[in-house]
Length: 489
Image 1 (cartoon, rainbow, N blue to C red):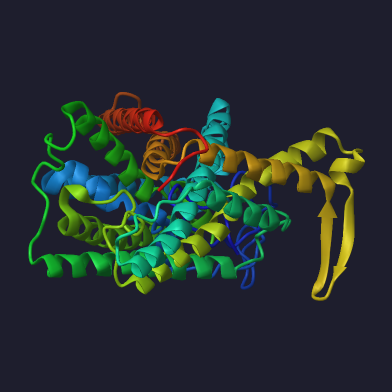
Image 2: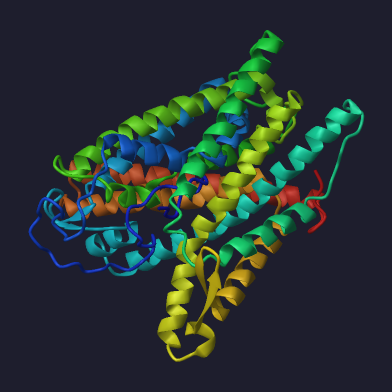
């Protein structure tokens, strides 16, 4: 089964058919038995290895493609250091969040099946609404980022073949709009599938695709370094002879957002933890799984970011596979870009599911007698039947058209990635885990531990604000050089 992913595009596995943003469901507490857990549900079978696999699948995605560019802005000292610091903060706050899977006692308390339920049972009140808004805005933003990224990859396939045919003499420029529209049409068709929960194969396909294009990007970077017989780049990143000092600052801040986007997985941590068997306690297993998966991811990110920078130096492209630092072997680039498109077609739908579910549930509750909203028509198909609903057809189509139009207005992959990373990083990865942990463990106000956690939260808030400012500044600069709906590559 699948559940909503994180800012980077990844599709995690989820054992239950609850949407990430569903409200808490009270389950009668019964005695655990050989077949059932303490909440009356079938025994969970997840282990440290399955949880690690789900996190790695969730984290490694399209965010990895911008890491070479991010490293180029920061340089050989700050680039790897920032990557390591983000990995440490993500790991530490994920251990705090893992403690909040059960309300009250981390070993025997009532289970929270989703991130929202954990916020509701631990903090309650306005925190739940804020958490919901942040998640919905982030999910909406990710669909825009995916529309842009997939259209760029579609064009990259056509451009690499054009370069190959012309021997590099034709610049092969093309308009992005037809490709974004094509992606939108595909998503309108997929959006009419009522629920993606049963499509377990989507997680498998996404995992294979993300590892395929990430590994190809890494391999090409290593090959380019060997071909150059030199390691490019500098200790301080892109020089002020190429960009102005002001642009250097904005780009460096934007790079922070890009790295934050590549690491985010907190909003599906509770869902993954809900697949883990006990004993030992779910929180102990989850903490170990977080350490393993974030360590593996960090090594992979270091390799991709550093080899990409070593291969291209200050000229590192914003998207490693479509920025045309590589031209050959063109067929390998085509495989990588097709893998990106296949991944993003499915991932887009999974990220939309919580938004679809929220709007449709709200509409059904407010207008229970509406024929347009609630009536379902059973259409027989060779392999079963399909439940057709008019409201779902109209609302989901409007949603996809809206994300496509916004993507055509703001076709900037790096800026969108940086903005999503900066907006989602502090609240979801730091603020809520810290506040929930303080409430769960009843840490006294102004104690050393309380002050330390608040300092960590405030420092990360400053980084998020700075990264968001850098991404917005980047968008403003980009908008000066392009006309809306006339973006060419």
